[in-house]
Length: 129
Image (cartoon, rainbow, N blue to C red):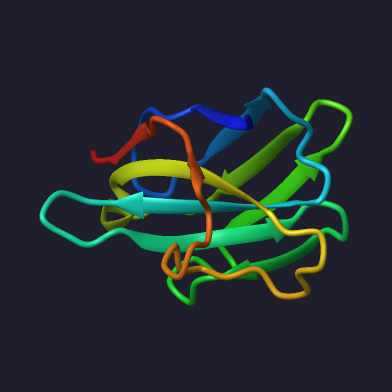
């Protein structure tokens, strides 16, 4: 069974950058869709970005467009989230989630309706001066 594992969270100053990694154990990410979600204290979980691994098609929340970039390295079985120009409101626990979806054409930013059944443990991103 596929198990995502996140890494790369840290404390960074506003305007700084971080790169999160989501590696997968137990299965290849081929034919999967991988999403990044985040949850801040007292707030609901929100979808940040996702990628259809085989096709490389991506999707972004409006709040992170032009600042975050999702990518994948199929040889390393890893998906990345490059986060630039970070803001204090980006502070949250970031989760990586995966879904086997060989026929998907647009990846969802919602984890409802059975999407993204495989989740990592999360990595903390704190943006503060």
